[in-house]
Length: 166
Image (cartoon, rainbow, N blue to C red; front, side, top):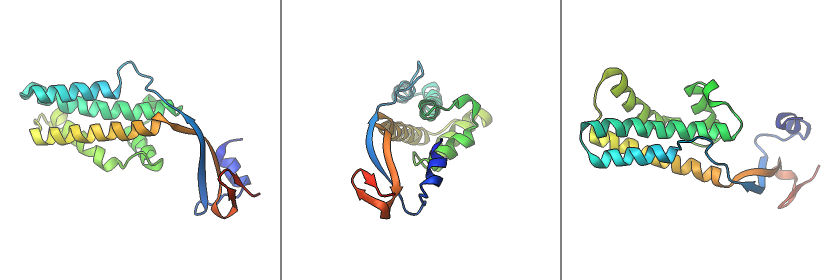
């Protein structure tokens, strides 16, 4: 039985559903190069300054975001290389990890560089680095203590901190 079938059987209604956490464990990046590695390189490049460093910084900021997105998907059992970027971002939105609009700013800046050969301004690169750092940090917190044990039920059927009537 999967979770959807269980929700139907228990008649859990979306507007009444609540989740009570009862445990969790950390989920770690399954890749040899981590989002933090890309972020560290991006920050280092930006600090060096100059055209090459600025170009590398924006590219590594996007790589940090992409690696973090793929990390989230991989640790949840998906195969990131089989999912489109749009589907990945929609999944993150649907699961409450992030609003993808802000991530598009970094992607748009990198696309201007990669496809129109226009160098981003230092302020655009700095903003991209901030967005990447915030995204990696925020999603990492979700993975540090991933709630893999929980109880779900309708709010009006809650009996206490760890049970629902049925």
